[in-house]
Amino acid sequence: MTGAGGQLGRELRTLSSAHPEHEFIFSDIAAGGPDDRIEILDICDAAAVLSAVKSYGADTIVNCAAYTNVDGAEDDEETADRVNRLAVRNLALAAKETGAFLVHVSTDYVFPGNACTPYRETDTPSPASAYGRTKLAGEQEITASGCRHVILRTAWLYSHYGKNFVKTMQRLTREKECLRVVYDQVGSPTYAGDLARAILTILADPDVDSKQGIYHYTGEGVCSWYDFAVTINALCGHHCDISPCRSEEWPSKVQRPHYSVLDKSRIKTAFGLRIPHWMDSLTGMLSEQKTIQ
Image (cartoon, rainbow, N blue to C red; front, side):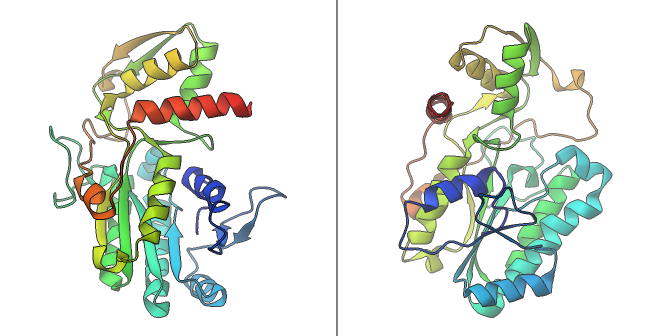
């Protein structure tokens, strides 16, 4: 597994302990700490990727690595392209040569975000940002390679780990008396732990080869960033006064999707998944976090 130090990677590492029947190899560009079981692997190095896949005898590759700095990608699309496209091609070609199965995580940003009904896998992508363009290019590299694969598009990812909206709002609603959050960007928050469980379910499916392709996975339900922030504030027991505002009040070089809801019918039918509502997952994660603390 690549990107083992990120949000999704760390959730998969946590869940892996419940699956002793499998041998997991976790890799990242750098080790996260002295207690981490992480192999160092630069997936931008094609030779290193192929060598690692062969030496580990990997039958499955789960790619959780990505350049996710949406604003940064606008200034440095070359770096974003190197991680989100070229590195993905390296993994796909290694999977093709060795016969490994590749699971790759993509994004709602492959769509323009101007729809009014949930995007389906069959809808034509048309990214409006450098980040979206590089992620779509990565998907296309996988398809062109001919490797066995599943591509999972997700959105609004959060977890206990790393930098994400939930952790930012936990801090800001604790520190500030008032906040303004955009209400005209709508999507579906996704707990990385839920996505990690979905990935393990897919990999355990004996008929996964007949179910290859692109799938959408997010939490159930729909909300705006404002709704999301208000819910976090309440569940944390904070008393910050949160007001809604328009996106135009927060000028950005990136055109962020105003509507990025993804239709999940296909993945639920194919793999028998029951996807939790985003509020249930958020409540559970925050309760667990309080217990850990």
